[in-house]
Length: 176
Length: 159
Image 1 (cartoon, rainbow over the protein chains, first blue to last red):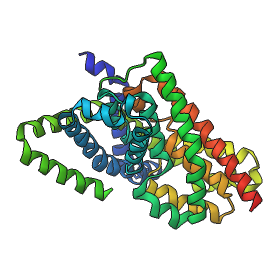
Image 2: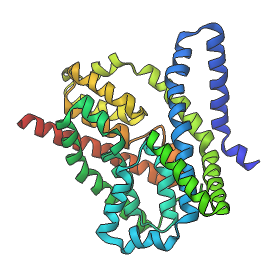
Image 3: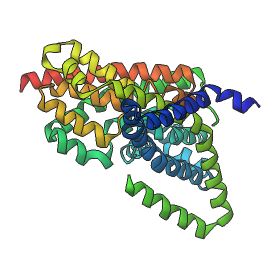
Image 4: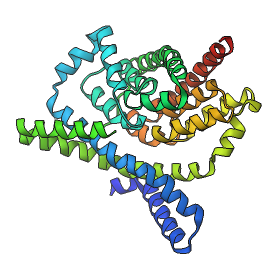
């Protein structure tokens, strides 16, 4: 019972939207059809492909990679090498930032300090190798290089500040 | 995107060959996590789809264009912060905006805020990080996007 209560708002939104979409199609209400077909369907496609895959990888990572290994490479004592490794992990990430949260969670669970986790989340924003072609193609090489060079220090510093705050206050990631 | 899916399939198969039981356990863990955040994810997607409908290309050009001045930066950050647009749509859109006279520095604010700030995905983020940290992270990222935009403007004005 507790579970359904937790998602009460979400279920209400989902049901209301389903009714809205059905009515829109039934009456030919153009804005409703546009919202459903162009916007929602676009998100759903991305979500249905990318997210379950991300979660399965996270699950496999959880059962295969022992905590000691993670701590050795990106844990508290890993230093600069650890920072570079989490950055690399972020750069190789595809999909939106919310696809990175489960990864952040599993890294936390395996003993990665919050600074490295927030640097990882920042890295996803700074550069995503899978979409470089898009950025260069539509906005040019100069823009791409400048954005990365400037974003790099700013967002890495932000990651450090947030991570330190997190570590000091003794925050915990939530168990999903 | 396709690469990740292929890589995941290959990894799963290899994992399965090594240890069936472990693999199934891992997949089950992943799927359970996914199912747990699915309701939140769905409702967020629905709300975003509706918001996106009201933000048309013309509106964007009007508020992000050179006539908008300093306000364009803040507006770009706000738009980026409240919308979730996949990369394969956002870059072409940014390309169109540049052609219609929006400056590159404003575009950088938009792109960075879009990627790093997600006001509407805070409920998803909070499932992992908790509300306090999620909100804090988004505020920081918002400011960060504006700082980068300011630096970009500085460099573009010099060259």
